[in-house]
Length: 106
Image (cartoon, rainbow, N blue to C red; front, side):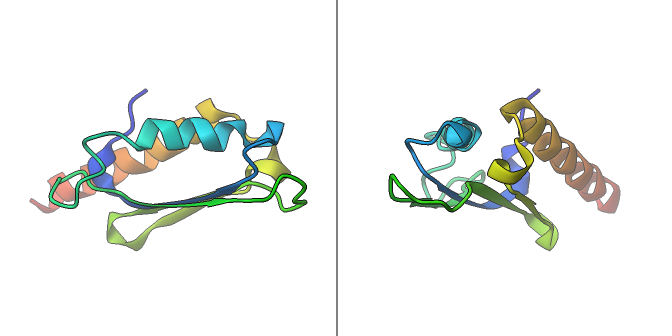
């Protein structure tokens, strides 16, 4: 399932790069940080903020995705043991809803 990148405005992630529970955060970051989302002039530009926690941090990894229209979704990856496929499916579902609303508005 592909993520509609043009519907995402912001992406915030905080994770411990050495923690096993941070794998979905690292993978999603790699999926969203592409050459088409990096330049400011790109129509699919995403404002990405990354906070890498120290090695022995007890803070759980979390991801926040901000969409056009002000909708925001927060995934507490460490607490909920979310898998990458579940996060991608949820982000894609919300992105499709936003795209559908935009096409209906005209």
